[in-house]
Length: 438
Image 1 (cartoon, rainbow, N blue to C red):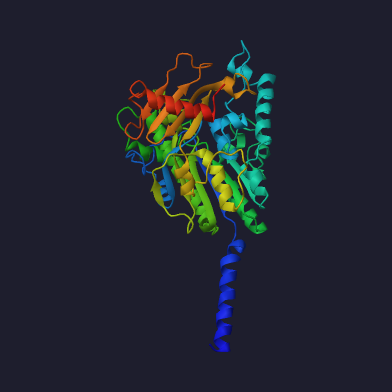
Image 2: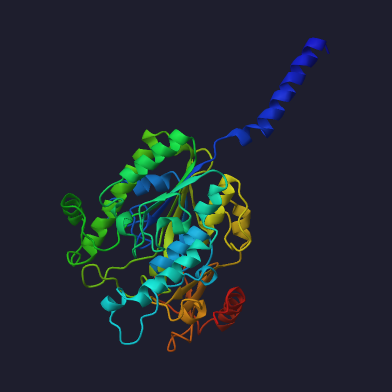
């Protein structure tokens, strides 16, 4: 071998070493966009088979994503569900279990929401969020800026560790609720500012859609009406039209990312905070949807899009929104805190090794803000094809244990608890080991 050839081979070896070992370290960290739909049934998407809907932007997102069609949120109520996404902790861990504080005896709802008891209760609930290792706080360690828009229950946006935001402190989200419904400019301005500073970013996009009031623009309503069924005019039709309104905002969001040439290095994660089934009146929900332990309130597609990093496909496993925080942390190269029980949704071995997913539903207004068990209504778990629901005697005294084979019975019509007592016993023991609820 000539010295010239030796020099070439040595140069090539040095180049390959640096390519394999140093290039990943110099790659720009991914931006993160969390899209959180608000009050939407798990099947109410065109890509999930609903022929009454036209959702081209959500369909395109699904086509470009790893889609877990059997995704779940632990709790079927807005405030605790959103808190689990941001903290990676179950409600009984972060203590944000309910939407609102306890109502003092004899005080009507309107007066309660103007009372010191309400303000003090919400302040206490906000303290739970301010003390948590939220995604914005953890990502700040890597130089990330973070923006809160849309639904937000925990006071000022900074309570969650966001560097920027819209919500100033009122219940639900005050000015933040304009996102999607009225404007997308805060997101545009935030991305422009982050790019000018050369910083990666996290965006919390949780528009008040398709959440009630179901009042989409007339053009969307008229187009949606063409696909309504008999009886939809009163309640379900306006809800469906609100989903199509939400879909249009997804298209706008994606255009914003593409126009600024950041969509290729942005991890987008989609989830719904809880389900919705339209009731008999406009803006009213039916039983077995939100606030219930059934799939109508808990199930949601979970989608992950990151071009050149995630292969688009449909995944059959049951997963949880509790997995979102660990997934984001892994993507940016951070270790998850030990309290987080979720797994990286891009780690198939970790998903396959998990024996079950779990959840818990609580009262709308707390019984005791500081004691999660006092507010508990149901615990539930899914293992393989089966889902077990266990009522909490402190709040569901007349409830019964239910078992469903949700792979064959996705609408939970056939209770198998009496037919399969051994499986009930086994799953309940596992559920008790996870969280006994007392």
